[in-house]
Amino acid sequence: MDKLKILVVDDEARMRKLVKDFLIKSNFDVVEAEDGQKALDIFFENQNDISLIILDVMMPKMDGWQVCREVRAYSKVPIIMLTAKTEERDELQGFELGVDEYIGKPFSPKILVARVDAILRRTTQVSSDDILEAGGIVINKAAHSVQIDGKEIELSFKEFELLTYFIENKGIALSREKILNNVWNYDYFGDARTIDTHVKKLRGKMGDKGELIKTIWGMGYKFEE
Image (cartoon, rainbow, N blue to C red):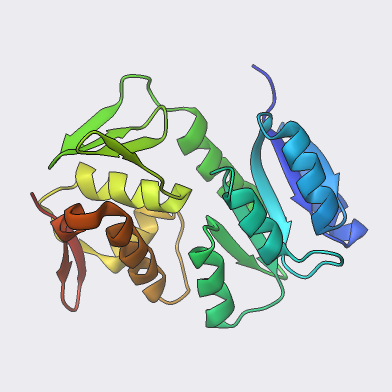
C-alpha cells in the first residue's frame, strides 16, 4: 500500500523537521512548505495525493487562516492547525473555517501523530458498503458524502463525523463529553462550546432536517426521527 502523503506548513525549519521526522517514523510521506503561498502551490499541484495538511497559523506572505480558506473552497482534505495562540476566539475561528483539529504550541509530536492517525483511519479505512440512513438522510462513509432527500450537501470533516455519530446513536441522549471523546477521538480539555459551534453549523447546512438534532438542555444532544 502506498504511503499517505501529508503536507506540513510552518515557517520555522526546526518545527517542520521535528514534525516531519515523527511522521516519517510512522510511515507517512511528507512534503513541506515554509509559507502560505508555497503551501497553496504545492497543494493545488498535488491535491489528489495529499491526505492531510498540518498548518501553522502565523506565517509570512499568507497566514494559515487564509490558506485554510483557499483550500476549503476546493477541498475537504483534513486540516490540523498549529498555533501559539490559545484564545478561545482563535480556536472557534479555526473551526468556523472548517479546521478538523486545533493544536496549541508547544505540543507533543507523539500526540500530533496520534491525532493524524485517528483522522486518517476514519477517512481511508471505511467499508465500501457502509451506508447509514435515517430521516431522509443518507450517509456514505466510504465516499464521505451526505445526501438529504436525494440532494448532496457539503460538510467539513468534523461535521460529517458528528452527523455520522448522531445517526449511529439515534434516539440516545449524548453528553457533550461523550461526543467529544468519540467524535474528536481524544480527551478534549477545551471548552465544550466547540461542540455547540459545530452543531449550529451542521444544523444550518441540513436545512429543515437540522431539527432532527435535538438539544438536551444541560447535557448535550440527541438525534431523533
